[in-house]
Image (cartoon, rainbow, N blue to C red):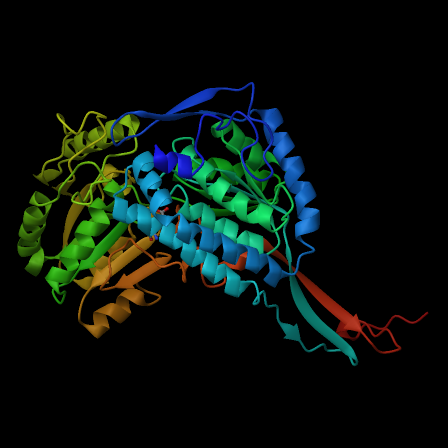
Length: 508
Ligand code: UN1
């Protein structure tokens, strides 16, 4: 409770005016938020109505007119202060992430660290919103390009990284001069409210106009309204492929921009030249971290025949040591799944895998008894499968790891690519030729390809996202900022004639 107080989560939540630029949240449905950790009610949150949403968009539009006039480095200075505020609240916010979402405390802290890191990155970026200059084909002409802000950026985020993925978008969008409307997962609104309070304090102290950071708590209907809304030029959405397709279709129908970060079906290729002890850490953290609910979770291990049996034995004994329980207890490796629906999906996938001929070498199941009262704790499991099984082609957001054998690297790469998703991938090898083949144009088809590192746990400095059903978007580092801006090409004539391009003659 003291953590909730310090993060200003109290009985006024959602009843009115949460944060900077928030309209009312009254007259609408109330949702109870129970922790998957112990099943207890943490808080009740009032969801926004369509009218509330319209008020928020209006506030955001007004704020944009002012915010875009602030010099980008001044906006960066505000984001620097947000990063500092997050440093101060890291312990509390990390613990709330862990309690509301169920990931281990270490991972909760890690998530807040990602937020701090992206703030630092965005501060630097605020002085580097570079365009190119070009040489004109015409005399005494000059060409260059500028990047301008888009306006209102809609951010739809998922429960599994309830705060970090929002911050990747918001920190960059803000320094670029945009205002943001955030619709967090309806499963994790409290961490979003906490972030909104943290940001609001910084914004108020700096007279940032109301509406630069907006939060809308709502269900699917609000997400759909955002996707349809021409007042929101960019929708950045993170979540399932099913959700992404629905959002992208609506945004495309109005020719808006979307930035999608959707499902993954990430594999590690474990070659005969792998350091198997290193590979083991990468594989096990990748598979059971966040209880298998990262979009970068390791779902498949593609293992060379010559090391298959010995690596399988290592995995079985490692899985025997995984401690499952209260994620706030740092002694435990793995917490619960997000809710009962996720447990049902996990159980169904295990049955589907068995029905297709999968052989479980580490059995799954739901944990019962003291400490597991929420009913959301499951055992991480491992099955030997064929890559072509329908269930293996599907992303189940749970700790189910599939083992697949291979003989030649070409075959392993083909298997790794033979899924609808294309987010993250990895190879474990000490052989330079194998590593380079995996990274080449004929190698992994994913947005992220690692050597001697697992599939999860990317740093914020690189562009994050993937191909195929992962949606094609890139967030976070590198030049991902460009997605939040519109490019304008400017040609300036400082001569006293008006020559036309391509040498066209047009005399009057
Ligand atoms: C996600 O699961 O949506 O690379 C994001 C990782 C984290 C981010 C995951 N840095 O695993």
